[in-house]
Amino acid sequence: MVTRWEQVARSQAGEDYAAAYAARFRQQADAGNDVHGEATLVTALAPPPSRVLDAGCGTGRVAVRLHELGHPVVGVDVDASMVEVARRDAPHLEWHVADLATLDLGERFDVVVVAGNVLPLLEPGTLTATAAALAAHVAPEGLLVAGFGLDAAHLPVGCPPTPLADVEAAFAEAGMAPPERWAAWDRAPYDGGGYVVGVWAPR
Image (cartoon, rainbow, N blue to C red; front, side):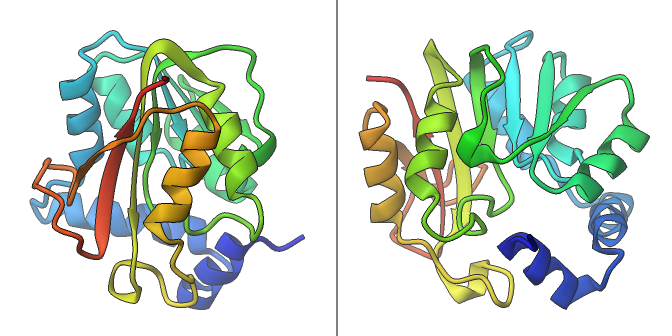
């Protein structure tokens, strides 16, 4: 089955979208741009060596940076081609190909981070199951951190928005407390705009 993510990625970058995705961030980093806001925030919230699950890890950018900062980290993504790039670039890290809606790694983490518009790119009808599976991987004193776009300006072309209220309802049903919200990974105050970073803790 071709996932929503694969449809969006192929429409933007062709069949070799995984390599193109990784190359885009390398080019940004080479140009002097900070591409590690997610890992910086996670480290501020949970100093190393906190164990982190990068859920929807893609080609591994966030997970690799978390490892560099001293975190034991596991990456998981439904897209085998993206994980192949991650394994090639960082074979020393633990990578899994799995659907987040049915994820069961048999362990809990200090932080579960969900970056890169993973939630809006879920398959239709899987948000509730995904929220439950992600929450089940958060340690009792742990955190779940997710950042995603809420409108067309902050989402890939072809990706329909997922309302923030729907995401918060799904995580509440999964046993997570109401989140703290920011407008970006640098913890700018959330003002109701088109991008949000939420931080959830178990109730």
